[in-house]
Length: 209
Ligand SMILES: Cc1cc2nc3c(=O)[nH]c(=O)nc-3n(C[C@H](O)[C@H](O)[C@H](O)COP(=O)(O)O)c2cc1C
Image (tube, rainbow, N blue to C red):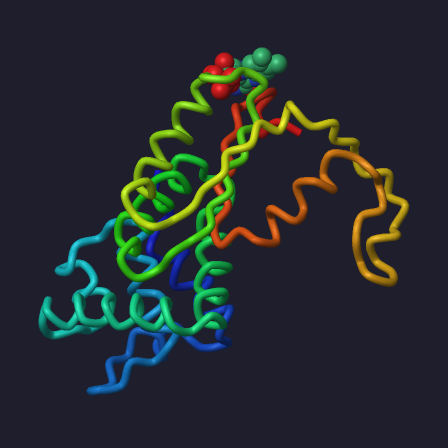
């Protein structure tokens, strides 16, 4: 189920420290960042039509809704800081909604493939290769395959990954995990990735550890 519009607006307002009135207020010729980001996320995550966006954000013409989305896309491809702000907002919006997450990644991929070239890391949390999770990840990756993106899919069960032992070393010095396990091979891949796709089965009402 897609996250509701109010939730997207709430998170954008919280991130930028503004009120909902400020968010939805239209200022002619001015594309303010929170408003543009909220409109973009509503389009990309919920797939809302231009009519809905006009109504929700006081836009007079449907063309204006498209140009806001296009403006945000252009800025995303050029401004790394903005890209990270929008990405972390989107992560908060879709937290815990794996179906929505896959759909969003697919939309993002098919929409941005001309403008952004991304390094994608797909993490498979199922122990079974070719499983339902694996198939869904493959479907998601299809959205990226005809662009110039590079991608790597890894099966987490092929790595020895130890649980956290609360040693708190990650809070000191270089702030890195000192456990010498398979994660040491995965961390650099995470650092290099522009987009991470998590795929996990539901085991006992939650994602796999
Ligand atoms: C140990 C275990 C626990 C599971 N717990 C749940 C559960 O809580 N809810 C659920 O809907 N399915 C549960 N399932 C079913 C799996 O989510 C389902 O088989 C899924 O397709 C497995 O993913 P995979 O095909 O990618 O391996 C569980 C399966 C296993 C093996």
